[in-house]
Length: 166
Image (tube, rainbow, N blue to C red):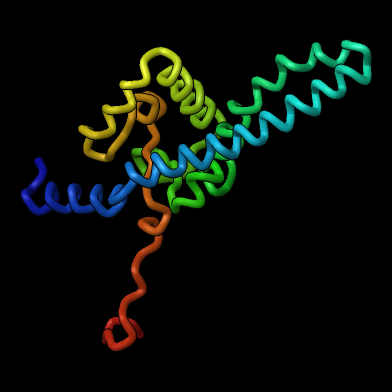
């Protein structure tokens, strides 16, 4: 059975890990969408031009360009940063909820598939983040991951005049 101190300590830890995560996730999402839009527009233009050069044969590659957003999120989350470029810019990282280790390729793929399903089926499901303890969305809960502040993973070093800082 948990003591009152342990319960308070766990809530404090959750607050340290997820302080300001929602607003940072929103800003990171916009940055990623702009970056993905530029990337997709460039790829579509190159593929369309390649289609003209090959007298229409290259246009069969156009549907494959739609895989790019999945690969963008999946490879970003499976990278050593455990974040897309927008999330990394905002100081966020995606970790396992149980032990705060980096997700593996399968967990990252599950997270991305559930993220896109949430967006495609019913976007307001993302509002669940407002009411959960660690600010987790449905795709976070199903994949077993949590978005946290990267700086919360490093312990504070102390102050220059602290006797314990030797």
